[in-house]
Image (tube, rainbow, N blue to C red; front, side, top):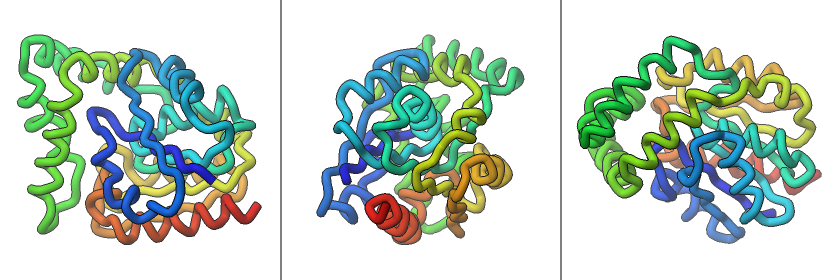
Length: 232
């Protein structure tokens, strides 16, 4: 079964480097979520390039897009993995906070926004924190300010996906880092309760990016989920 991975905001395939290596025996595709400014359009673009049927895993904004892929074409998704994400529409206070960030990015301060307001608050403390932050900054700078603005708009206008999750009938893994402050555990407990038969896995010693913070534990959970997908 092919595996399609959807990265988070201002992230690219480097977010999933340990997973790409671990699952090199299967077809793995990292689909960018950077070319449109709505969640609906981003999901439609993925469906145009994805295999006819596939297992789908998304982290953070990637998970939000994954839920919209499930809304648009549930028959094509053989299994769903939602990592460090949120099924609800954007809260007005969060949307309001994006405006000054976007203004700073338009003024050329992308690096400062990423450094000061975003990634450092997302991760658990640990010996690899500095290296992971360096990767995050490199991904953000490679994508650039236009992607930041498009993705910010997509998140601000995203639909609530709780009703979609109630209709999911494929093997589903809901996973998050124990110390994720951006998308905390209670959000994942909510999603876990919405999907019939879903599994909830909490990764210890990780914040918002367990794929990089705790890759072995993440790979173990993903591997067990993929076995479930292929066993149906």
